Length: 124
Image (cartoon, helix red, strand yellow):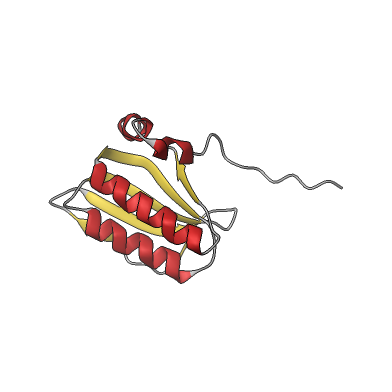
């Protein structure tokens, strides 16, 4: 992972943490950890907005470390999707924890979950 020079957003009282970097496919990745609700939505929104503005790649939100998420987090994801769509870029949700997956399945955000890592194969 290559760091994007974004600072770690963290609120120890809420257990919130998000950090951005790039994956091997050149996509921007924001890793979420802890609990995400109305009290962390603004910090998450700012972190994702900085990641979107910093470069022109697609965005991946890694949800593997999410212990809890609610509708405020879904709102941030929806706003991020709209912002990326206006820039002709995509949003993917990767590796949601079981709790995050259950929440995503309640609405249409479950459609954004990456089924498996994408591998590029070049023909000789």
